[in-house]
Image (cartoon, rainbow, N blue to C red; front, side):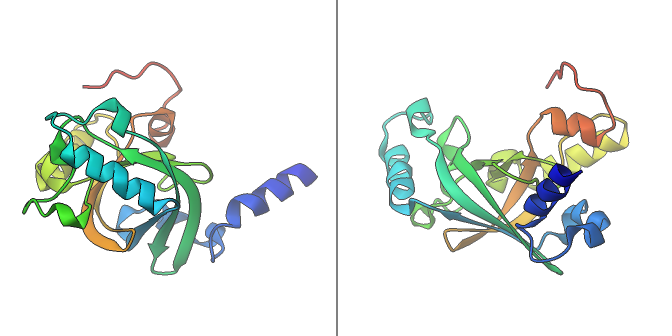
Length: 194
């Protein structure tokens, strides 16, 4: 009992509000005002971006998909939560860097985020995608339609992001993992993705 009480206080220590009072709101994607990511070693992160940009290959090579430690802050109307985690480049092609206008000076890129503690909408791993890489609203509409017909689909929605103080709207997409099954009241087992 003592061990459980200590672990519960540690798990809730990252939020500036009592999470038990907001259980319903914390499971609603529309309650997320912003996801802010501050990369601990910003210099290496930017150098990595420039190496991807200047690489002659059309694809993003595996050697450029390095992990960087980061602080992730999720802002809600009633407070905010701080998580420690790691981020890395997502995507195979270079459409996952830049933007619609190909303004590469914005250092805009699709990311995979892995939380070391806590979760966002029950997801400990998720992607923040540049909308154009997934046909923007079509990805969200498709996931809503599939969910409506009974398929198990990852949580997918638009979210305002602030990555190293660069503001963008990105697509939040939960990774297909055991947490997806748990959220859909299924037992752990094989997952076939298509």
